[in-house]
Length: 402
Image (cartoon, rainbow, N blue to C red; front, side, top):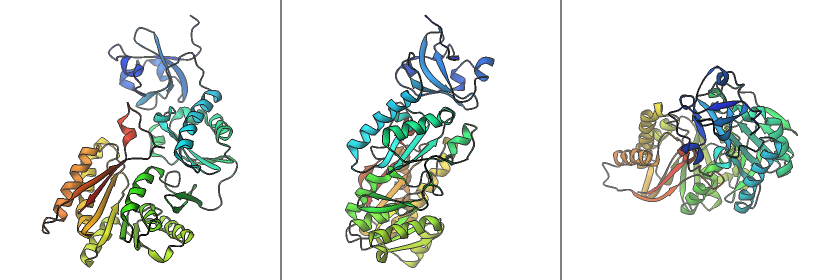
């Protein structure tokens, strides 16, 4: 057998190769022989992974500076990781999205679940935004951008380096235009009958959260003729969807004035600006104030940022989810709906549900009211879940009738 021209890394004798063969996509530093040669491999290099008996297992992307030292790219060790390989992965991902959606607005690549570890690509018509959250993607970024244009016909490709994951990989936070030009204004994004405006260069993440699309749709079904409170609204995710389906009014609450301005601009584009109000402020302060004012709504939605982004933050995060539910529940009128969301991968569904129910119970304890859990939602199908990676099933949405 001709020796591989690639650098070689090896599993520790105590590390079983079975997980890799079954699709486990990550290998930590304590699972690998971290000798001088392995530590000297340049971050982002492609290497041959061998088991402890020196049998080839997979092609992996290596970053000795990261706790996740190796990310599995391909179990076919005879292949070559190049632009052609990227093109195949992109085409496979695009084929799924074209079945799912009528318009080119979606997440095109969802990292490991689409076979491209640490890479996120969101599509906004003829503009694509790449988040290369791992070193190998940074190394191959020019090839990735070119392949993306070939596969999708995109005119503009942007690099967004704002993700927290990049710092864990020892990478910079410099965003850039890779191909074409950055839009000179927020991009209109049609979803669920609503129009959202996405800031692709200055907004959160890539500019919009496509993952909540099915939960926006379910909430909107409940919102016809309703008065809606949308807390942590960002650019109006739940409120604009509700207004599109006939909500009487919506109050969008967020700590970001630019995000609320985009929500108002989206409402204007839809012709429903007379039914949307915004309120800038800390969500907990606003929820408390609304309670003191005796305000009630037919639907209250709370979609906060990740309160538990890591296991270390889990307990504090669950307390924050409980507090959110406690403050929000009394604002829901009799027979109305409460929607509580979590994007914390460290808090699994059961822990999140328990925290929400504790909060609802505390919020309603003097009223004798009860909660019915009527629907549980997750991320949309353009955010597929990797079967061997629980973290890829991060989004949770609970719909209660109170």
